[in-house]
Image (cartoon, rainbow, N blue to C red; front, top):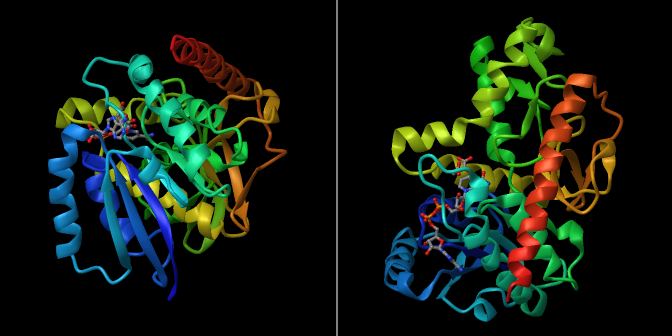
Length: 333
Ligand SMILES: NC(=O)C1=CN([C@@H]2O[C@H](COP(=O)(O)OP(=O)(O)OC[C@H]3O[C@@H](n4cnc5c(N)ncnc54)[C@H](O)[C@@H]3O)[C@@H](O)[C@H]2O)C=CC1
Ligand SMILES: O=C(O)CCC(=O)C(=O)O
């Protein structure tokens, strides 16, 4: 067993955390030999609920759980953090766009960025889940200047998993037969789910998902809109936003960041743009990445046709607008 690492989960009394805490504590992210000190942050009115979550974690009798620290103080929560799941934020209700949450949620990420800067390890890996996730991540990074920008990421893995599931279902394949589907841009309805580089394994042979499906109208139409609107569809059905699937995606994202991606495979993550694929710099944009030694790099050289370029430009424009609005909100104080 290794020395314990400190893992922070914000929004720890909420619905995503309820699934996420169990998966992390079972060793599904950092491995079955890695002991964990879980730091659970929520707001003061939720401390009673959080106490119940702590009781249940104890009652799960999880051998990897070294210590659980419930708190409403960011200074306590982020102390020595090696990894942070930033879930705590308001979810949207039916009829809202995720960016409608911006003014309420962005200030949370300013305060927590400042706390990460002061109290976390300088190599902390930060995954922003709370919406609008990409813009909250750029704000968090902005207010944590002593931590490298590369350490701040936003979650588009749920969109990737949704896209993978759509392709697998269309072809009647298991989900693990589908690889390298890409989510470009914002975790919003402007995101671009791109199947052009995806591959599928059929009867032991690898082939292009595009050719296997053989229906460009679907792949440029219903496939894209289904993935873009899946969050809203879940809200409409459940009257609450996705939680189990979001927790699973957060684990997948951090798992791959910690452990790396298999050769020839890439995953999508919102990362601070370096201008790759002609996208604006210094926004958190979802790109395909490969990961080695706990460091991601954007996959270069993928062909982008005019259809794709148009989609990338739309989502980049939205991210630039969101960033301006978020900075204006933060500068009000
Ligand atoms: N990026 C993605 O793919 C996804 C993002 N989300 C987003 O994740 C966020 C959380 O969703 P749920 O867990 O369903 O919401 P929830 O409402 O069940 O839980 C949120 C928790 O955050 C807490 N919180 C609020 N302000 C806080 C602060 N300043 N510090 C610490 N905790 C704070 C709340 O008290 C609550 O316990 C929402 O913004 C939601 O839209 C949800 C699904 C997928
Ligand atoms: O759609 C939302 O705003 C809530 C959850 C979410 O981000 C998602 O399900 O993709």
